[in-house]
Each structure stands twice: as C-alpha cells, then as structure tokens.
Image (cartoon, rainbow over all chains, first blue to last red; front, side, top):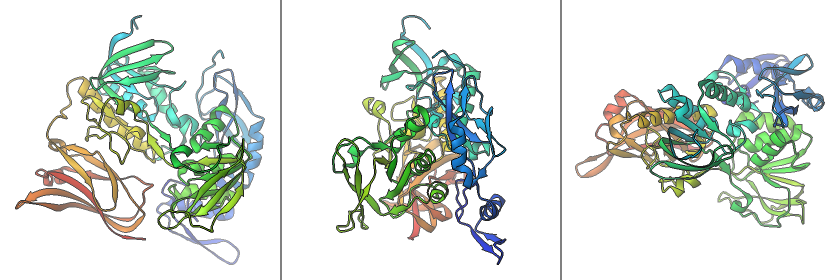
Length: 116
Length: 437
C-alpha cells in the first residue's frame, strides 16, 4: 500500500497473521507510516474536505474539513450530511459548523459579514 | 491616495496576491519597507490566489508541520498582510509593465493608474494548457474543461461540470478533481495518462483513485472527442514509446465531460511584453540567485517563475524575492557583478536560477527538475573551468538519491566550502549519473 500521511508516499509492506492482525510493517520512513498501515488494515480513515452553503457575504460556499479523519466507508454519508449544512457569515477558520459521527466539521476560511 | 493616481510611486509593487505575492510583500515589509509603501495588485475578488479553490489538505507540511487546506494556508498569510497594514487592491488588473518599473493597471477603487515602483515582484502564477493547445481532434461540444476550471466551478461557484467524467492527465490537479467530482456525486470513469508514469504524488493515486476504484490507464490518450452540443464520448487509444497512438487500440468511452489536466504554463504575458528574458524550458523569466530578472529591480517568484509542486517552496522562493526587492528599493542589493550561467546537464530538464552573480555564491540553492524517473542516481554538481585552452568539468558535490522523478523538484545547495571551489568557474552545471528504470 502507499502511505498517504505526507507527500513522500512511502510504499509500505504489511505482514499479516492468520487472523488478519498486523505482525510487521516495512517501507515506512517515519513512525506515522507504521501507524497508518495498522489503521488501514483494521479501520481505514480519511480526512474529508468539501464546501457548504454560505450566506451573508459575497462568497457562496465555505470550505470545510473534518477536524479528525473519519471512517473511509462513511465518506459519502458525510457528504450527504454536509448538503444540509448552511452557514452564515461572519465565520472564522476553526469554527465548528456541524458534526458527523462525533467528529467536528470546521470552517477553513475566515469571512466577514458583507452586504451582497 | 490622491485623486490623480498617475505618476504615483511605491517602493514595492507586487503583481499577484496568491501565496507568492503575499510572502514577497511580507518579507519586503520585514526587511524594512513601510507597509503603505508596498502595493499588492490582485485581479481576483480576494487575496489567496489559486489556494482559494484548493480546498483539499496537504499544504504547509514543511513550513508549519501541519497539513492545511489551501484556504487555511492562504489565510495565515492574508492575516499577516492585513495585520501589518500592507496595501493591496483586488479586482484590479495590471495591463503593462515597463523595464523602468512603471506599472499600468486598472482598479475599481483607483481607476486607471500608472505607478512607478522602486522594485517590482512578479507573482502572477500560472494557467492551464487547453484543448486547443493539445489539438485533440473532433467536434467542439460543451463539457470540456481544464481540471482547474472544473475545480473553480465546483468549489467556488457551486456548479457541477458534469455527471460522467473522463480525465486526461494524471497530474495532481487531475487526481484531486477525480476525487472531488466523485464525492459530489459524479461518476469518474477513468483517468488517462500519456506517459508510462503518473506525474502526481503516489499518495494522490492512493487517496483519489484507489479509494474510489477509479482506473488509471497509463500510456493512453484521448484521440477524438465526439458530441454535437454536449460531449457524448471520447476515443481513447494506447500510445507507443514515442507517445504516438497505436492503431487498433482505440476504445470509445461514453461520457458527458472531459477534464484536462495536461500541464501548467507560467503566466508571463506582462513579462514578455516588457521585453524581459524568458527561459523557453521553464516558461518563466531568466533569473539570478536574487530572483532578479533581466530587468534590474524586477523580481520573479512562485509559479510564474517555475511551476512548483509544494506551496511551501513557493513561499520560501517568494521570501527571497521580497528580500531582494526590498534591498533593491532601498539601495542595498548588490546584484550587478559578473555572472555565470548554470547548465542543465545529462538527465536534468532545467535549473533555476539560470544565472549566478559569481561574487555571492555561498548559500545559493539551485532548484531543478529531472527529465525522467531514475533510480539509484548520483546528482553531480560541477564547475566548468578553462584549463589548457579546453573546457573541463570538475565535480564539486555529489548527492546519492534512491529515486528522482520529473514530478518532484530537487535542490542542491552551494555552501561556503563549495562556493570557494567554484570561485574561478566560468559556469556551473548539474547532471545525473544514472541508470533508467
């Protein structure tokens, strides 16, 4: 597998035992790669970035991200949740605009209220 | 601001308010130029440049140790610019630049302006190669977009470019849009890549294609577009080692949208019109280690100089340009000594800077790209000297690398010791001693 933690993208090899448990990880150049490999086997997660509707300013959409990675299988469900999120300016980077599966969805941009 | 904006002057004018322009302006301010003596001229409605539409994460790992989204990365520099009180105008277009640093621009707030600058920083970024430039045969239906345009539509305007998508080009923009379109409900049928390798990061192949089971067809290209008013399908063929379509391998794929991610071109209309020397390989200005172009006091940085992979390096390059611009504007930059040229040797596509002022080599970093994927190579920095009436290459530094690719910019630093060795060089080169994969 390719590690996605940083732009280097180390090629990892993971050894599994008969129960599917991880016995060894090689190919990583840092400890984060090893943790990523284990997570990929047991519970793959991804950071989701998208946009939500925005009002009260000239920009129509607010870029958002999950504050923590969420389960890879839940990405489309998270997108569905974001479709119904509407934020009004003013908003600051880091403001929590929604939650999904217990994870905060935060704003990635600071925008003032503006007469449109 | 006075009402008559003709013949106004600023110590520093920065053309472009993206990451390069923002960093250059900040550094000029840090180096002593007053904030109201700096003007950033930005054509879009907000500062931030292309980062505003790059809503995905992956920016800032080197500079901040964090993986920020584009808007978050830009936001940090925009905040610093505002906190410092550095002047900027948006929705403003520079029409021309002269080599004696007169900048002509139009602005909703300032009207038609002609300003003289103590120093100018070019930070206009780059644009995408188009279908016309590619010459893909076929009809001209709606539904063909460059990947960056599709990104702008989806992330800024909120429009979906289409529902069934084929992407040509596996550079990072194409890969990122494959994921984005899929998450927003489109079906991305495949990504085709002309070369036998992808130009994008391996992590993007994993998280943008593999995660969504989108197939990647290496050594394939689009040979024809069909459809009357809207794209109905494309013909995809395999290519040989000379990148020519192989007869008999054509496949018709029904789709309503074609995204093109086939190269970025530094946006140097202003630079060319000013008569400033351009490097045909990089598409950007020829510069020295001070980021100074062939026009004294005009500096270039970021994607307008060379297309970068990581915005962190755009920022660092722009800091250097801002420092030099501040030095020039205050009379403290010594960039007019004898220069020598850098030479892209075997395996190297280009080197920036293209020229070096030989009296200030210590601390200079040479940035370059290789022309293919190579494993187990040695990067060799050499000096070109005249000896016994002949030109001789003398190795001054060697770096071993497990892998180098065209998609990842490399650098090699000239430290004090090496600068000493290069003292009498009439040129400096970088080459690869390699074996191809």
